[in-house]
Length: 202
Image: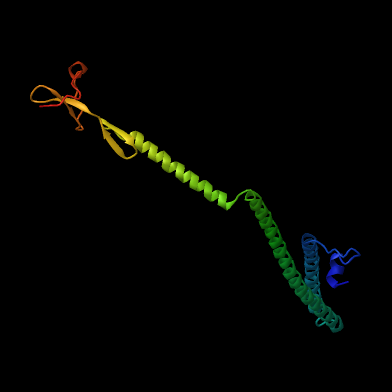
C-alpha cells in the first residue's frame, strides 16, 4: 500500500481510490491540524525564550535547557512549514484536476446534446430545403411583379413573351370604317361598326 493510500484510507481489497473531493477534504483537515501545531510550537518557542532570559544570570543550567528546547521546537516548526507547503501544493493540484474533470464532463454532456439535436439532420436535405425556399421566394417575387405591372389597353398575349394586338376600327376621310392595328384603343359604337368589318377601302 502506498503512503498516500494509507493517508487517504485507500488501497483496500476493491482497489478503488478516494474521490478528488474526499482527498481535498482530507488535505484541508491535515492543513488545519498542522496550522494548529504551528501555533502551539510558536507559543512554546516564545515561552522557552522568556525562560532562558529569566534564568540567564541566576540559573545558567535552566537557561541552557530552555534554549535547547527552543531550538528543538524551531526545528519542528520548520518541518511543519515544509509539510504545509507540500500539502498546499498537492491540494491545489487536486482542485485544478477536479475542476478540469467537471469542465470536461460538462463539455461531453453538451457534445452529446448537440449530437442528439443534429441526429435527424442531413446536410444534403438541408441544402435541398434551402434551394426550395430560394426558388419559392423567387417565384413569389415574379408573381408580385406580374400582378403589380400595368396592363396596356388593346394588348393580348397568345404565348408567353409574344404580344398580339387587338383589331379595332376607326374612320377614314371618306367616312367609312376600316380596321386599325395601332396600340390606341378607338372607341366606336357597335351599331356603326356593324357590317363594316372586312369591307375593302377605296
